[in-house]
Image 1 (cartoon, rainbow, N blue to C red):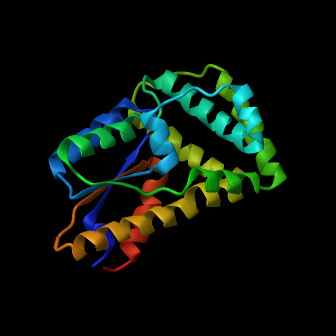
Image 2 (tube, helix red, strand yellow):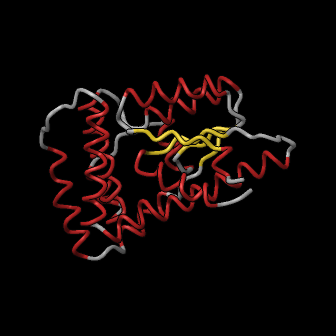
Length: 221
């Protein structure tokens, strides 16, 4: 029997209000034994205690700080366009875990490790990423329906894999493996505590959903 039997993956658009509502609905309906979210300790703390970082502050931390600054600005821009601050669905899962007394697990790779891997990307990929990131300061059309967002997102993921093979592996495939491994450990822990049919809900970005499910489905309990 595969681990996927015990884990329900909710794939979310981090800046979509509909994703936040879906997280709330599924958790309240399923009443899981555990909730897992696509965060590490540093990002978990940042979501709980949001602080604005200026470009001047980012520069003080060197290339690592600048990369994190650009990624933050991209999420902020998307949040403004779609009416939801970045990580709203993660905050919803965190709040419900607290209210319902459900154990909460952080399953993603450490952000500093991710950033260091990005810095090791081929020069071509880093240059292209910087150039494309500049468009974050330009207006773009608002999408009215989430199904349009999802369609556009799937197209974007295919294009991203083609343009950034190294970053795709680092940001998607390697993190899929880490999150799947952590989810399997959660299931094993619940079973060791005597829970015969554990129910775990994992809230991850839409780009990770299929990859994590595929790994879980290939591993037997």
